[in-house]
Length: 261
Length: 285
Image (cartoon, each protein chain N blue to C red):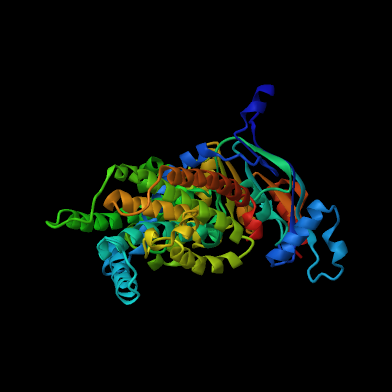
């Protein structure tokens, strides 16, 4: 039996809606003072408030376990909480409650070309982007040729990336991420760009990574075909909760028949 | 299965302790810090004709301007020091402080996209900014040294008397780095919620320069008020720097001790606040 590498226990995330503060320091301070020292609710003494605080539960009580070498798909409509879950997993923001435990190095790819600097060349950006994603310099240097070959932009590797076409840009960025060697890889919608040939190449790479190298992948996508092709198991999020969990085939069909209409 | 319980590499929970700063992780990302420094230094002058020469042009022009405005027009005394040396010393140090402060104070605002998409220790950004600032400082400091040496070995040199405290120069740089870094990350933490501070900082730093003996020597301030200026550790360092290199300026070990202590406490508090803010700033920025 393969071991559990990600254990998500009762994760919730609550956002305040409206403004995050009243926008004025003095007012924030007064409210903070009143609520923390006078044990009264700030709203009580100021009945007329232009901006009452409301709460929005982006995620409610999510619990999932992911095994090593598994490719887990996450699908759901806009605002279902997919990105919030990925952001918590990637440590970009914290959960409001709950706990996640992880074994191994985790790398997330929530956007292609994060941290690319337009004035730097493709080669310089490979190093920068790789380091941002947590690679050491020697690791990048060892894989440099492989990355450049995968991206298929050899000819322009010493040109500033601001001169790249968007396709080249994406290919280079994905190439860096694909050659990361984390035990766990989190991917959000990055295949949406790039031509069909490159998309297939990426899918192939991701399969190879999970099947042959035993790495775990969490994949969020709106492309039902990619999810079916790639993921062994899928969860369907709706309004911040898990609606259905099961084989990709089953969950995708349920989603298409019941929710996507 | 029990033995597996201890092997979790990472735990994500809603609360973390105030003092939980992952220095080991920061160390793992040292290559990133170096790459950020290189990016800052190379990207700034890409597509410019003069390139790195700008590192020199800026202090030279500023010094020329100060000589004209403060030296000739306002006729502010520079003590016994040649004007060019006096202003260049002040500008070189002050610029380093100002640049570290302003650049690091924008950490969260300018990187909100990056920080919203990928995790790495956020302290890597302000640290890299201070290091690249330090490299620029040493380039400009070389210019100062050249001019200083010129005056030092002039035949009729009677005004410049370097002394032993010149050896404290590395300490001065540490204190200046700490101050610029500390104020910068403190402001950047506060600006995630209150953007007002960004406007304040732009002219606040100008005002602070006039409250610091950069364009005038401390000794021309009436003795009754000197202590007030010396509350500012930056003033202590600038005066001590001038004293070490030229023998003119204010130096005392107790003032220096105060500046070091101030920096350490201030740095400690700023890092705690920054560490607190970085975990949730994506939701408030």
